[in-house]
Image (cartoon, rainbow, N blue to C red; front, side, top):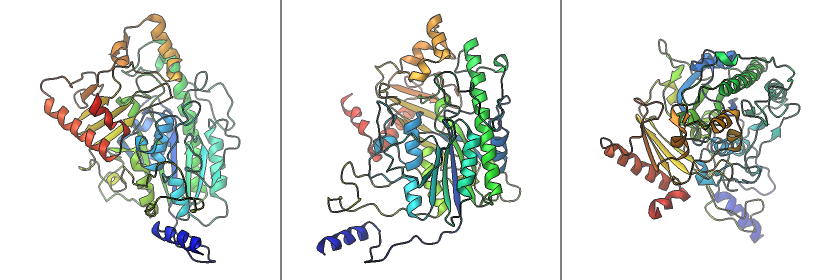
Amino acid sequence: MLRKLAICWFLLLTGTLCSAGAETKPATIPARNVVLVVADDLGMQLGCYGDALARTPNLDRLAAAGTRFTQAYCTTASCSASRSVILTGMHNHAIGHYGHSHGEGHFSTYETVRTLPVLLSEAGYRTCSIGKYHVAPNYVYKFDAYRNDGIQGARNTVRMAANAKAWIAEQDARPFFLYFCPTDPHRAQTGFANEATYPGVTAEKFEPVKLPTPSWLPDQPEVHEELAEYYQSISRLDQGIGTLLDALRDTGHWDDTLILFISDNGPPFPGAKTTMYQPGVNLPMIVRDPLHRAPEGKDTRTTAARVTWADIAPTVLEFCGVTPKPAPRILPTENMGDVPKTGKLVPWQPHGRSFLQAMRESAPADRNEIYLSHTFHEITMYYPMRTIISGRHKYILNLAHPLPFPFASDLHASPTWQGVLKRRDVQYGARTVQQYVQRPRHELYDLEADPGELRNLADDATHPAVLSELQAKLKAWQTQTADPWLSKHDYE
């Protein structure tokens, strides 16, 4: 009897009702559904972002029906760590998910961290994951359903959308949260998986010679060949998005569903993915809020509000009207049943904030400063970087700067980088190879005057006040978010 009373008292403290012999059921929730789409390694190569060669009619029509963000950022340009931020609203350095969760990395989130699918499920939502998962442990990121039959490694987005439609159409009165994650346009073992046949998908071919080279990539034949493969993979992604949008209309959920489209990090080429440079972190985000109607005469289809993937979870929760339960006030003990018994206790205290209101403004004044954090990609890729973007300036702190910048295995093996090695090129795009591989401790850029981030102002005599201000803000943010790498300020 005493043990039962103790458990009830714990549940009361955590905001959970306890009643003898009665099952607690969630209250009825008005239909406010959410579809969160996370592409894999996609940059700004979309028609709606001004890429005239991209064939993305379905994402373009989503942008026409919603809001296109021009200043949206992943907090870390690495797949697994980025996804942990998306689903928790917390920076990965605060939750232990420092890098890849699979293979030798085996990084995982602290077991007491609260995640978006779990919080929504507790609030009465049904949840489903389709496609790439890439977070750990599974019970921390638990979904009610996983519908991955026939999706060909999450490359067949048309089949993924068909699976999604079947799940949405099930006889279930609860609102839903769908996490839809194609693998495209991530690299495959060779190329971009374009050699396979995907039922329902039309292969869109691109001529390499017609694809211009971005300034951050070298203008070489193998780069053009890779870009052609990359754009074909993007087209395959887009076709599945079209089927998914049609599924929402067909099931009667177009006008009660929040749709968010983002990418986990930038393109899978050296100079973008795994870096803190703009091509790696400044990414597409398209949001359609069915409850938002622009005031007459005001165009809110584009916003320059600065947001990060840490803002995704708080935004979804606000839209759904879900307030997470208070964090436990006492540490769990062996008598607490299914409550986690080990690991670091991390209450759900999001580092991000909702952007539902911000997306209604073209340039909200309070959305001009963000923070980014990267530590690992693969286990062999230790290179902690912390970044602040404030106003027109961007400051990158390379905490392991004496080390050469490491390469993700797929980027190192790419024909793009192998061509550089075989020719012994001095130049890599607008940067030298030496500048790319050997970074200084401090990097400061004026993004308005120098959008390519080529002139480091950290040692410029005219910018000491800006550098000092951003350094102080970054250190304060590291303290606020319990960054384990804060100690490097003291002994290095």
